[in-house]
Amino acid sequence: MLIPWSTFWERNYFVEWSPAFKVILTSSYVRGAISGLGLVNMGAALFELADFFTARPPDAPSGDQP
Image (cartoon, rainbow, N blue to C red):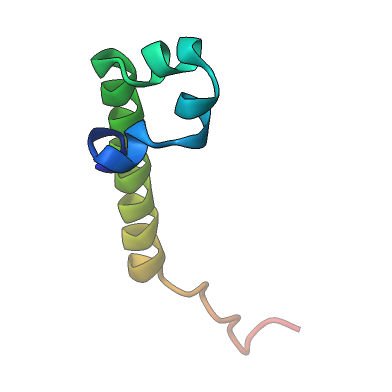
């Protein structure tokens, strides 16, 4: 989420490779979109972790059944 706003982003291989990519990738809109996707990804990961840790084991079969 933070990488698009750092100086590392501006020294990216793709930014240095093409001037057209530099205009696109250094745009605040593109940086915001990538940060937003990172935020959504982090939220989904936290939701999955919460679901994993709160899951109950399946019921054990009872001894009545053959």
